[in-house]
Length: 97
Image (tube, rainbow, N blue to C red; front, side, top):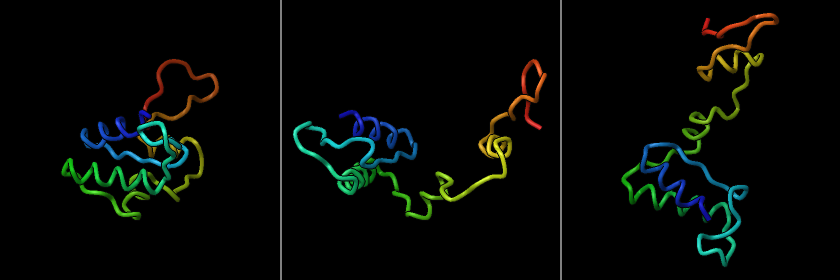
């Protein structure tokens, strides 16, 4: 029951929410089931009411990096803006290369 309120807050704060069947099978009233398509339509309506544009399928894939892969964990961490994994025996803080 919290998916819609949390996604509404995310939209209002300028974040990129996502939704789907794995998030919630029940409508906010808790008495009927809701499909993924219905959840998406609901969030599109909320976004429009809050003056936010809705991403196209391609834009959403780019935002979430769907279909991108990297050669190893360190490259993935670097692309996400995180420091690399520690090397064996390394102590102290890790830092960006």
